[in-house]
Image 1 (cartoon, rainbow, N blue to C red):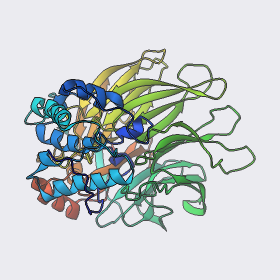
Image 2: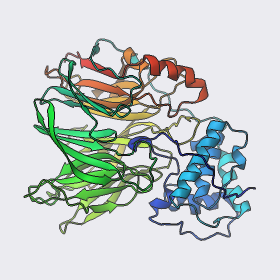
Image 3: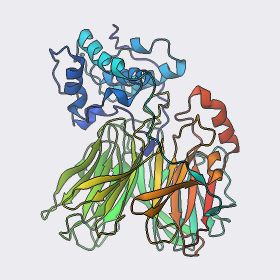
Image 4: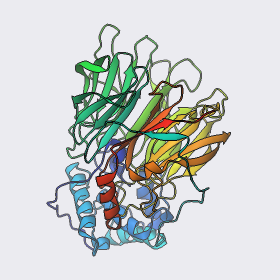
Length: 542
């Protein structure tokens, strides 16, 4: 068995974005908060016991049937780096693309100083651990549970033509500004922010105020824009993300300035008055890449600028999203935080009287889960915020775009006392974004969802679904055939046309992430013919 530590001279070219860059077994060392893996070499020789010791040291222990054999061979090769083992024997005979992917990961991991100088396992131990997973894994991925067929519906929503044009679109943000009747669209390839009016005509455009806008908030004349700073995680340890602010005068942005710089590939931001002083704190979800964290920035009432030194609640990378809400009814805002990158979990940080926070993990999943987002909404109208989570990241788990049976939409009902019960699951490969609204105006909540990594073997891609709630936590699934032709990375909902119901906008990103050779022709056709933007006007009548 080869344990070569030779560094390959291959450029890291992995395509990933804040919430796109969730790697199977990624950031294992970081999750333990260690510069180097702290576990000592073991005398064990049983593969299952070794997995329980090493794989479960920093995240939930994955079962062997989560992935097929070829995916385990790739994932374990990558995991071996964190154990000081560089072993490519299991991947011999794979395509140049597959080998290039794993070589670049070695380079990336080594550059981040996450490979121990000496192996933590002997050759026999490493073989035993690998065989535990590979020999017990299925030949093919276990499919998702069955579900009702999706209905094609062209009556509830109609496609509105728009003036937005962008070749080879890489849309990283879409946002409906209901108050001003504007639609913001940012393309990270062209580095252009385009604004459309409520009739979807061109209104204004700006050179990008940062690299790849990924989140924004509009509050009257105040516009906040979050830039990831490093779209493809090419610059390890160089935090380039920024939160910027501008004033909107009739939709024209003026006075753009940086509020906070040096963010670690941020994916999301939120505001909340945590200390009840009348001034909102800034909550930043730094996805990072080894260097991510969840940070709170404070500011004085007298200044618009935030303290450059944040309070860091966790230095775990892979933070996807946060939201402030009083979960325990003590009058202070707590914070729910979604974490990915191996230790997939939803945590609530309880706001204590002294300004400190106590962490409680609400839900924790296995490392290939691929969390991509959440929403807090009261589905059963009992006055308690329930939790909807989505998981479907598949862009960086392996080069085979393996379909994961666990991908989908889950609703956890809040039973009080910080206890949440999974009460609904909709299986959906590659689900990547959702919006929860009462789309049909019948008094309950519906769910619109997109998938960036659907089953590309299907003739009609399941890349958009509308789940209309018919009774409590029972949904009818629908789609619009116009959505088959795009690869949707972003989704937003809002009443753009001012008629009292929620419309939907989808933004496309035609990147080859997760595209395998047998889907190359389909992808090229989609990239050349697919729309950069799709606006679905709500026509549902209550």
